[in-house]
Image (cartoon, rainbow, N blue to C red; front, side, top):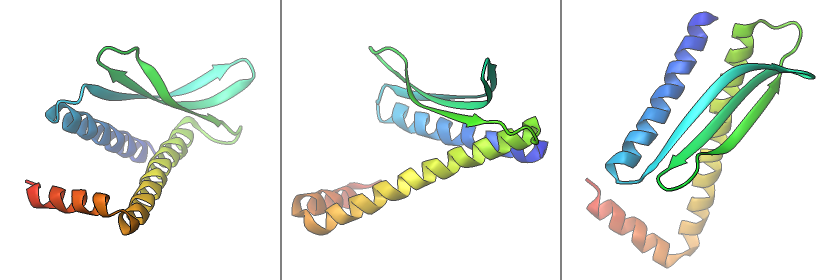
Length: 124
């Protein structure tokens, strides 16, 4: 399980590094960070995955804080594995919803269709 957790951690690190690198190339002063950690404070025992945005001229802000309650019968590595899989699934789910809605808009908006064609013509 440790190997699976390490692989997922590496995958998430690569995803964030790629997004941040792309933003930097485009001159977008926005960096995303994340923190995945076990938490035990009073009544809550579990895991938190926090995504933070750091933007030039603005305070650092949490975009999303996902809290997962830890069942009694699960070890640290299984818990972290389940959390990371849930985070990746949520990200993919969000991307699919955005793509679906964008596709619907493209079907009915001539200006958006032309902008998409222009982008494809000029894409490097």
